Image (cartoon, rainbow, N blue to C red; front, side, top):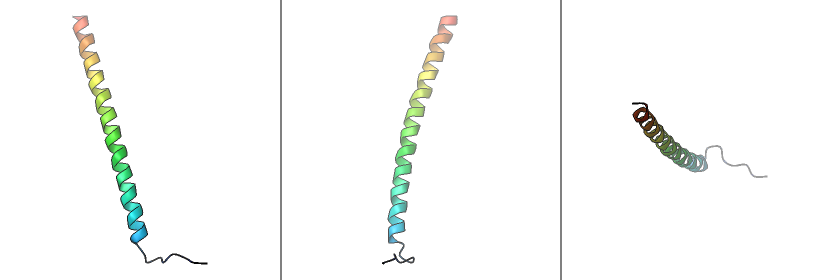
Length: 53
């Protein structure tokens, strides 16, 4: 039975880099979706405000 070396941080670094990349992609995706939704809400509110005048 072979155990990985607890002092070997190379695998942990690879995991960390992968996790960071994944979180960055997720954050960028969320930002874009939220930004587009907010812009659409602003546009809808503006149209509604124009209609109420």
